[in-house]
Amino acid sequence: MKLQTLKSHIPRLSGGPLAPRMLESQRLRGRAAVKRRLTFLERHPLCVECDKQGRTSAATVPDHKQPIWAGGADDLETNGNALCAAHHDAKSKCEARMRATAGWMSTPCQCGQHDG
Image (tube, rainbow, N blue to C red):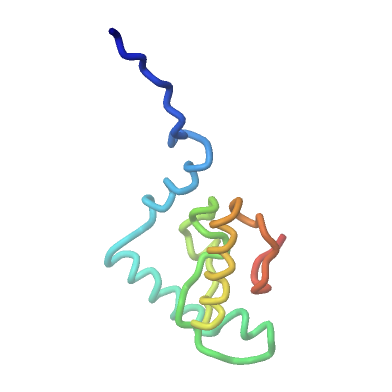
């Protein structure tokens, strides 16, 4: 008796829902990434979201405006924001909810930091 080969139902990395996640592996890592983040924070020392609210607080986290997993560039100069820890945590929580559902901007933004 000959066994029948079944067709794969796993999406290929060349397209489909898994394609944006491939971009994460293309991130700058290691010492070069640490140096880039420190340089970015030296040039942008204040939290942009606190500034919008009329407050002054130190930025401690360089963040991507559009996450890399959603197709955003890994370049902080074109896709970066300097955030304090509180604003970064709120934004990350909002993005985690989006990623867990149907993807980027699939659910209404609750942190107030996403356009669209």
